[in-house]
Image (cartoon, rainbow, N blue to C red; front, side):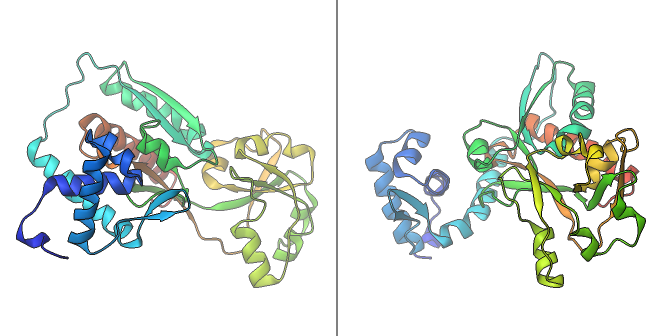
Length: 313
């Protein structure tokens, strides 16, 4: 690791953090308000210190090296800890505050929890405003990094290593069909499950998912996805008028009155891993008191609800 043990340079660590997150010399320079030439020289120092290229050219862009990405989470922790020393924790005073939080979340979260979260936040700060934005096919890490959103809540696997996260709860999938569906007349098996057309839900437009992989790998079966939507709640609407089969997280089922919709839920005849719902934020907000309050309240609201229903937290 070069001569880094002979003298620590906090500015060098800050520069490395910016370079890896921005994946750009000019972007990191603008972020730290230095010239591009200065940042280029700093990158040379980093390469010599860590004996790693840190950033490499990939087409017309630069990308962090595997080692740089491996070091990034630890680097964020170190910088956050140092920031804590310079800015000791204090009690949050809500007087005169009117925070506006922008949260990108899956619809399985927005439906059951949006209003409950707002009520909980307003107990402490009555002027709080929440703005929820739906998930999309774009990179959620960029929105967190560029401060387009304050918090992400969902289950995506597409987050960059520097993004911080904390698990909230697990949710499992069940099947949903119209009441009186012929599938319900006998034993529900993988073979009978694929007899009928299915609805799939994907914000990225993917017709295949874990269910299809298990059916194919373990049973040699293929289901036909006749309808692809981006929202589970939209998928429930009108399902009672068809023979389509929909696989839904139990968080959606628990939040919906299926009997009023003319629908019935059943255990899927395959072993699916649970889906972990988590909250994620950019390291710059790790020690911000009002953001800590937001994340703490999210945890309290969602975990309390799942414990009450006997789900896994």
